[in-house]
Length: 138
Image 1 (cartoon, rainbow, N blue to C red):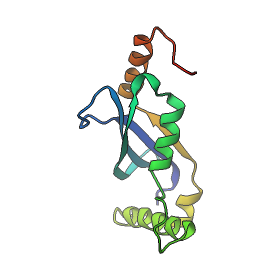
Image 2 (cartoon, helix red, strand yellow; image 1 turned 90 degrees about the vertical axis):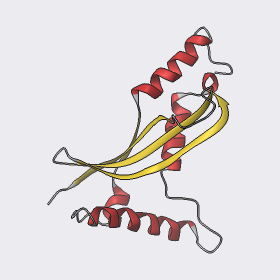
Image 3 (cartoon, one colour; image 1 turned 90 degrees about the horizontal axis):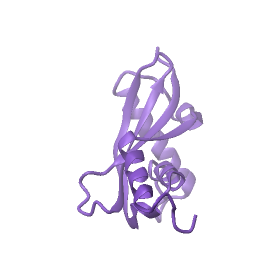
């Protein structure tokens, strides 16, 4: 039986964005297994902003990627804990469909790492180069 190691969110450039000068990021959530394998859990998250790439930072993108990966904000008829419980149960069901028995409580306790793709890091570096190595207000 495979054991879970950690959750990993990978943030990448969102190539479907119409305005390439503004921050637009696609994010996917995976589960790393102790045997070295991995399982994709979510691949439908991300965000776009009016912020230019030159004003973005690695820290900001990492934080936002962690936040958008869930759990989602509660609805009017749910509190934060109910929404979180539903989220972790949903992820556990995805794993169950792949014959992995990793429960919601175990998933919730796993470390969660955010990684930025090489393409995204390259885009941030290019924006920094365009400013002569200086980020405004930082």
